[in-house]
Image (cartoon, helix red, strand yellow):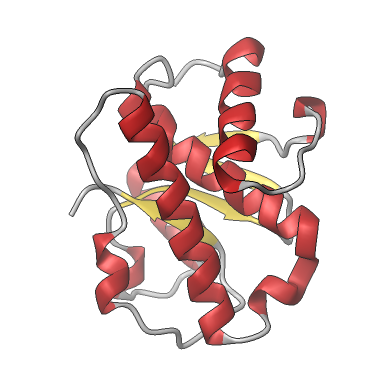
Length: 155
C-alpha cells in the first residue's frame, strides 16, 4: 500500500465530517496510518485475543497510541477500499469529540461502531457502490467496550 495522498486524505476526512455531523479537525492532526499484513493487523488490533471480532479486520483506530492501522493490500484510490478509512476517520472524530466517554458502556461503544458503519455505507452509496458493510453488528455483543475500533470486510 503506497502512502495515502494528502489531497485524498483531506477529501475522505471532509466526507467523514459531513456524513457524520461530528466536529471537524485539520487533516494535519490526523493519526498516522500504518499498513500491516492481514495477520499482523488482526494480532495488533486484537492485542493477542483470538475472538470472532478479530476475523476479517480491514482497518482499526487505536486511540491509546493515536494510530490507524490498515491492511497493506488496500488501494486507497478505490472507493470500496478507502471507505474503510472513512469508517476509521469517524472513530477519530468521535474520540476527539467525546474522548473516552465513547467507551463508557457497551451500548455506547456499539453505538459508535454503528455510526461509523452508517457513515461508511452512506459514503459507499455516494460513490455509486452498492456494497454494504456492518451487518455483523446485528450479531455483536460487547464484552470489552475499551477496545480498538475496527472495520471488517463485507460479510
